[in-house]
Image 1 (tube, rainbow, N blue to C red):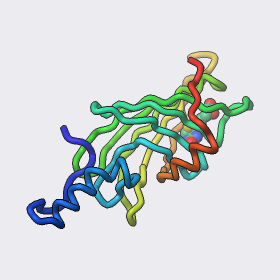
Image 2 (cartoon, rainbow, N blue to C red):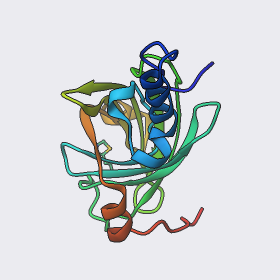
Image 3 (cartoon, rainbow, N blue to C red):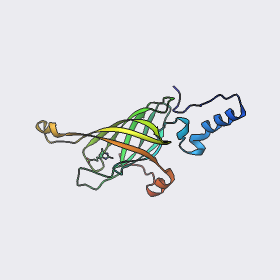
Image 4 (tube, protein in one colour):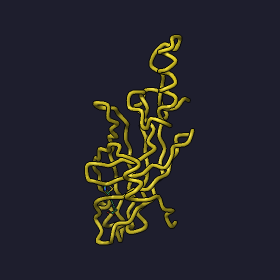
Length: 173
Ligand code: BTN
């Protein structure tokens, strides 16, 4: 299956060839290619709560790893960057679905799973997601209150600025 970008026109003319070149080079040299139907989750994203995530890279299978910096927590503990693991489809239409898990083990017993889909809205990549957060409870009796659900919208943010603010560090396991 091909990656999440495609060429949009005939390639027989010089203009077509230039377009093809730009489309192929776009993800590498020109930054995130909104106009070329790309939906590769690699990079920095920020959601409506102010949380940020950095997806390191998406491999040819669609699998990815990264780090999640939540802006909010249900615990009293100091928030720490948390590892995420996920998988995305690599469809040609740039509207890929994906899922990822965040393990909050560095400061919480909870686990969150996100599922979502990438869209392009007014030339901006938007990730519409829903999440389930499982909190650890003391007994089966309390199971009924252990799961929360919600919705987050992510937009892409500038890699360089975020890289300066929060350098990539290897997370303890
Ligand atoms: C916890 O409180 O136990 C760990 C942090 C959970 C943060 C949640 S995950 C869903 C929602 N979206 C965010 O960006 N942060 C919160």
